[in-house]
Picture 1 (cartoon, helix red, strand yellow):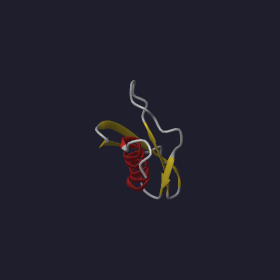
Picture 2 (picture 1 turned 135 degrees about the vertical axis):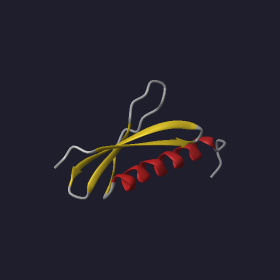
Picture 3 (picture 1 turned 90 degrees about the vertical axis):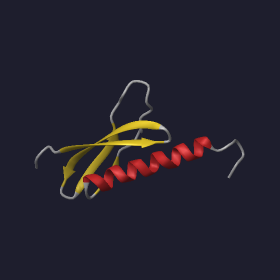
Picture 4 (picture 1 turned 30 degrees about the vertical axis):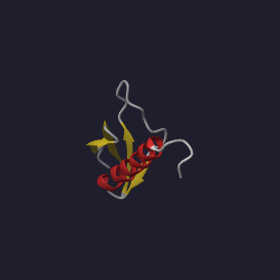
Length: 76
């Protein structure tokens, strides 16, 4: 298995994120946020069958987290 790594730049919630996706096994890719000073990182990896799918799962989670953080306290 080659050690393929893909990088995706995303702007989510007004912040820039660099998502790195690595090949871990057949049809299994792991995405995580590259640690950049001052930018929060995910504590867990996200998996998918392709690099784009894994990065998409992480991007969607970040978008939901930003939406939730932007809601006023007590809003549903």
